[in-house]
Amino acid sequence: MKTYNFSAGPGVLPQEVITQIKQEFEKNEFNQMSIVEISHRSKQFQTIVADAEKKLRTLMQIPDEYAVVFLQGGGSTQFEMIPLNFATDHRHIALLDSGNFAAKAAEAANALGRKVTVLSSTKNQHYQSLPLEPQAFDSNAYDYLHIVTNNTIEGTTFHQSNLPKTNGRLVADMSSNILAEPYDVTDFDAIFAGGQKNLGPAGVTVAIIKKSWLAEQNLTGVGPMMRYQNHIDKQSMYNTSPVFAIYALNLVLDWVIQQGGVTEMYRRNLEKSQRLYTYLDQSDFYSAPVAQSERSLTNIVFTTGDLKRDEAIAKRATEAGLFNLNGHRSVGGFRASLYNAQSIAAVDALITFLKKAEQEA
Ligand SMILES: *Cc1c(COP(=O)(O)O)cnc(C)c1O
Image (cartoon, rainbow, N blue to C red; front, side):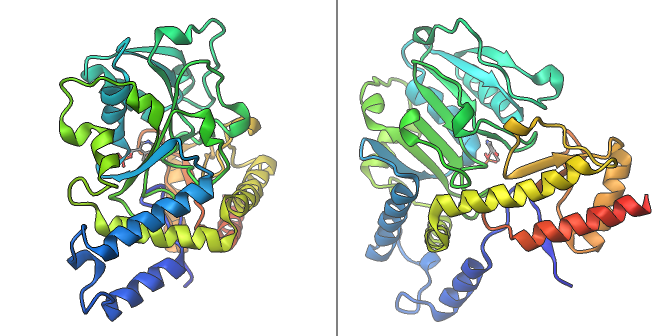
């Protein structure tokens, strides 16, 4: 039986990359040693890091004024590193509370003694829409504005066309839609993304940091591992790098380039998500709660309106080879994650299954 994986993270990787990893581990490329058995300071690994950085710069058109680093600790550690490195002047952050991961970032900044002002929140609408930009927003009063471009759990997205406008600094958590749709890097002062949604396996986190902003910081009481500058100075080898995760990420970047880059990923993601949304919208049985202009291309959230029934259908989906369709435990319903490596065939198989479940209901 052909199976499909709709996991929200760690998510599906290109089959070609999985095959390549298997083959390279069998071959034991580096003098009978695999990549996970050699020093992170070896020439071989240094080349992999340099290649990965170069490819990411090309794919996202990252200018030289930005540093690119590969870190550990996931998106959640960035919830702490960002305020430690950048909420240093006013020690005050503005935030758009668009979902669970925005709320978690606020919580982490608070725990570090930073003041967080939620400019706008859609929490009482269960985050089914994006928070509006407040009219009178004095960006000078804050060190930066924190946003989450794609709300992985709730299925809403600030696309490039509906990014909030600010004269101040803008920080974006792109963990679940980096390389899935185009963004203009120069609109941001810092971007971060955990690897396991759209870049590779868990264990590596990408940070893209405007160098001039970092240079302005006068950090006190910040430990060495929490300082971006240390990781930048050592080309992501400040301490032992997550060698396997970076190695695999480098292969995924090759794959994205071979497929046609972000432009082609975006085209495919639009096609995949629109196919599913179109089906859901015409159905009387399922509904997708998010308004069209805010809909995520990578995490499609929907429900029959009866969470128990949703759960039963998701269970039947598993038996039919369609895995991990349950919504996040905090919201229930369905969530189909359609990251870059997800095929159009997976979406068609899902729609066929959903139709059948509708007919049988
Ligand atoms: C998954 C995710 C995170 C958390 O990532 P971890 O690697 O589990 O720390 C943060 N932000 C967003 C938008 C995510 O999707």
